[in-house]
Image 1 (spheres, chains in turn brown, green):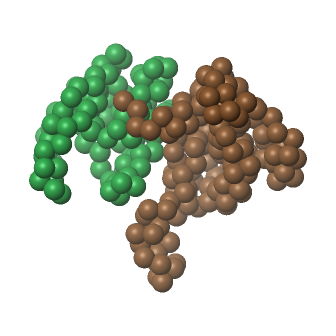
Image 2: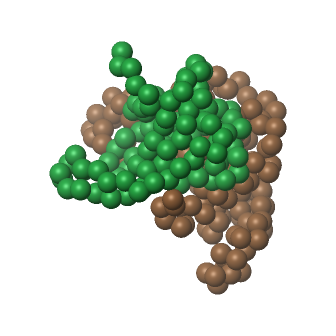
Length: 150
Length: 104
C-alpha cells in the first residue's frame, strides 16, 4: 500500500536502521514533529500566516530513547550532505518540543545515517559532533546501482 | 460521549493503541469525497484494536490514508506493529497532512 516508492524506501531504511541498531530502545518516534506548535509560532511572528507554519513544520525521521540518551536521527539514502544541515536546524527544536519534554534531561545525540562512507561528510559531521553511521543493506545497494550512484 | 466500535483519530492528539497480530487487511473502498461530492475509489487499511489509550477494548481501526498505511506497513511486515504500543498523532492539513508514529 505504498505511496511513492522513494518515500517508502526512506521509511523502510530508517525503520530497519532503528530496529537493528537499537533493539533495546525505550521508544521510537518516527516522523517526529519538532519545535513549538504552529499556533505558538504565529503568536511570535504575527506577520507570517498560520498556514505557513502548519504546512512547513519540521519533522525528524526518528527520535529514539536509548540507554539514557535521546537520539535524533536523519537518514539520507542519496544526498548525505543535506542531512547535516537538517540535524543542526532540528537540534535546538528538540528542547521546544512538548512531547519530548519528559526526556529533556537526557543528553542529545545527533546521528546521520547513510549507506556509504563519504570522507567529506564525515569531516563536517565530526566538526559538529554528529555521528555519521554507515548502514548498508543489499536492497539499498541495488537501488543506488539502478540510479548509477554506486 | 459517543459510543463507537471503532477508534477515531483526533487532530493533534496522540491515540495509543495495541493491535491484534495478523489483523492487517487492505480492501478496496469507494467513498464520496466531501469536498467535490465525487465518488472516489481507493484502499482502506483496517486493523483490530486490543487496547485504546491503555484501556482494553474490542474495536476496529481503519484509515483511507495511503500515507499512514505506508508508514504502518513496514512495522506490520517486521512485527513492530504488534510487538509494541503504537501512538499515532494526526496533523490534518490537506495534502500536507502528516502522521507521527511512536512505538513504545
